[in-house]
Length: 388
Ligand SMILES: *Cc1c(COP(=O)(O)O)cnc(C)c1O
Image (cartoon, rainbow, N blue to C red):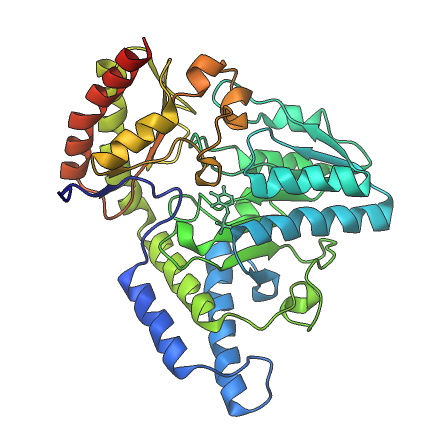
């Protein structure tokens, strides 16, 4: 028998495509097939589409169009930022120290770990508080002359905490150390003005703000030393070779424009539903905790741990009941180990294995949340009873 309930509560893993964005992509797929690097009119038409998109995104980020690099995804943007800046700093000033938070997405942390293993960098982790937040003073006290770069996530994908990026950026700038922020979760809800954020590098991925999967942006402040990690043609100022994905680049610009224009309205919509959900769950389910910051968090993000509950089993029961959630980062489901992010908050195994992430978006409504809240407490109770 088919289950009629089908509620998507995993917007941090990916968002549905906005219909208007789909229209832009389709139009470009049908009509703009030329290679933007070609001289003829077919190429020029494609090049116009790419440079229009670049201008739209530069206006939103308050930067120059030349500072926008199109990439294949958010992960690639993080990879280019970390590897490109670290290798350039090593070559130019013999830098060998990398400073990152312990709550980075794997696109950042695994890249930093590889730089330490293969290129002789010393990787240092910043401390975070119980909410997973990085304090600017902790960054300041760890900066060294040979620090190649600092990377701190803007808004955390697992626990929703928003970091004080502008203040951390000011600290790094005062010492002349390049500062990267993974802003992939921030695209739909937070300000992206790179002058206010005082970042030198900033990563975005379109499918987290109702755009297509497989396309991203890296902002690179003019003058930031960066070595290309994808060599070939001279696209993207020589920083990222490969023929542009014209339809997706145009779609991403449209998606970011829509998301940022509706940002406060969407934040209010999401926060009302999330606040209701958080208050209900914490009051009704015994031994439950909110993970991440209670206030400085993404408005669409509610993350919990339930003591003594198998988070993956809970996800499966929820899926059977028609609710799509996540236990932590989507890239990690199936892994029986507690998440590094939750461990960094100081949660022990008994709590950390019982995580649940509920992330909503512009297509979520009151009825979805009510259905979910009617279902969740019983499932948690059942798992605890089976475990006892
Ligand atoms: C999704 C995500 C990424 C990876 O982006 P992709 O476009 O899926 O490669 C990186 N960082 C964070 C914080 C994310 O949420």
